[in-house]
Image 1 (cartoon, helix red, strand yellow):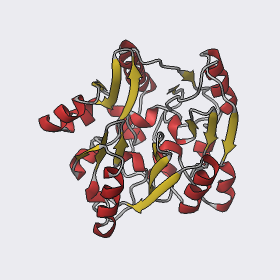
Image 2 (cartoon, helix red, strand yellow):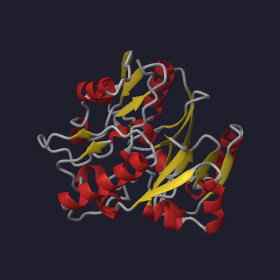
Image 3 (cartoon, helix red, strand yellow):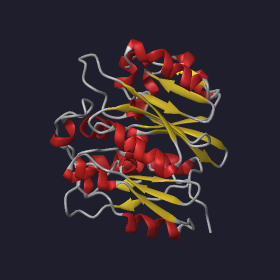
Length: 293
């Protein structure tokens, strides 16, 4: 996780992110929201590594490191092409590597996809790609931030097979990141199929069903509350399903019961981060799958 020093509304990014709304974001408030989530995870035995952002140059979205970085079980670090110049400044593999090495993790190789930016192709990490790591499969909804050719470059470099599809909001605007409409846990998936064109919907659901996961369907209003933007993590007492308080409130009782079969729900209230930044808990976490020394 990255504790921000300059969090704020990012107008250029907001042009493709309908979840972000212009407004003031007091840094003290944002820091308290960030620390609240980190503390909740730590209380459940999740190992939390925090990188403190340097204030200059300004990086309004640095709280969302999963967009520029992913870490894999074979020791691979992947660096991703970002759609805006301000977000490219977030990439700091040296600082992340130092933090990981102090915690005993090993980075064995770096796959750098950032050259795609020169051709106007973007792929924003595990925002764009929802990874099924055990099966080396992924799901990606195409958008201005998720380019089909860049997805293919990822597949070739990592040995993945990605199912690509389209998704849009009620106005017909492309959903900016796949991880706001789809979550994959070990034994479950959460999907807002209302965003997917009818001609593609059955194929996507079939692809998810073929993994053996229990599908939890949510509606568009739940998606707006980040119901699909949660993440399964390892806690000392078993799996932890981390989500925002807004996402937790959006679930119906039967959906909560279904999720509780797969882990302990751990929520944190992060309204400023969600409203101004346009992302939620899953976006704030770059999960570590690296081997240890």
